[in-house]
Amino acid sequence: MPTPAPIEIVHNAEARRFEAVIDGALARCDYRRVGNVLQIHHTEVPAALEGRGIAGKLVAATLEHAKAQGLRVAPYCSYVRSYMRRHPETQALLAPGQAV
Image (cartoon, rainbow, N blue to C red):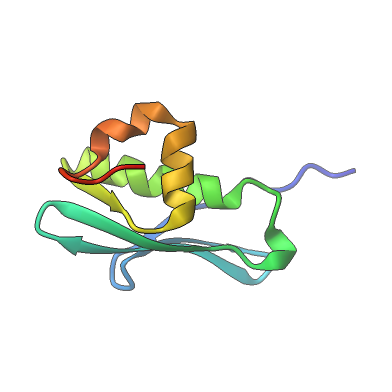
């Protein structure tokens, strides 16, 4: 079985999302920036691409961006909250009043 190509995550700042196009399909993690808080409100991976860890890679890239920019995170997306519970090292990014 051939090794799958690495997933390239791109920050599409104009669309306010991190995204990857795989096999012609778009996977994405959408956010809004409000002051110094990145509100992550939607993560979507097409059904045909599920099970490859793509959503996790998108969320990791989004959280790394927030950290690099000195931003806090408001995880409005249930997948992002779940990811942050599984990766407690990311919880330092939570904006005041936010929980996972």
